[in-house]
Length: 235
Image (cartoon, rainbow, N blue to C red; front, top):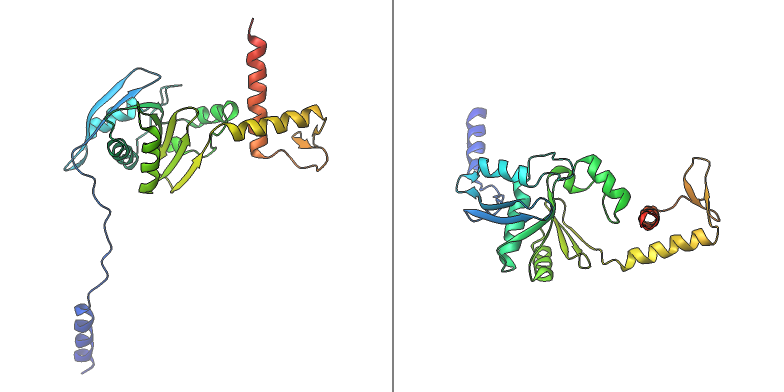
């Protein structure tokens, strides 16, 4: 009797429809990219995905094409980032993009963080999930289109005329240069007023509060020193 009741209950549960989890929309195939590298002069042009998925030979070529040009190191490139990039280029009405930066080794990223404002310590570039690129036209339209898709991170650098795109968490930021200049002036003022001193741990601190410099202030300081060194080297 108990077995019969159990089987009836099991049959009733099986008849209840389970919630269906929506699968991500598959990108149209084939997918193509036409990219040139601003630093190496190399070009990738052709399909990288077909009806069966990513094309192994094309992905290997893209791994090499998007290498860290500072040292030649490579890493597998995230196909989701490539899909995002291809969709943005197409939606902006463009056919080709120029790559400024893709994979970065930890050493390269650390070097850039010391000398360039706005480089993240844990950048998606480290994982082959980010690309900085520019287009011949409609760059701001491409940025707005990419942000509306909410598929990853989009950084907008209008003064330098490029977009950062990655397949990491959804987030947006702008870096126009004016905020950096204000921070640079703040650091210069602290130096001029004697408001910086060296703490017990060897770090620069703001004298009146005893607090270390903020990350943005330290970045501005690095840039200030780099500019001063560059000027000093000019004959």
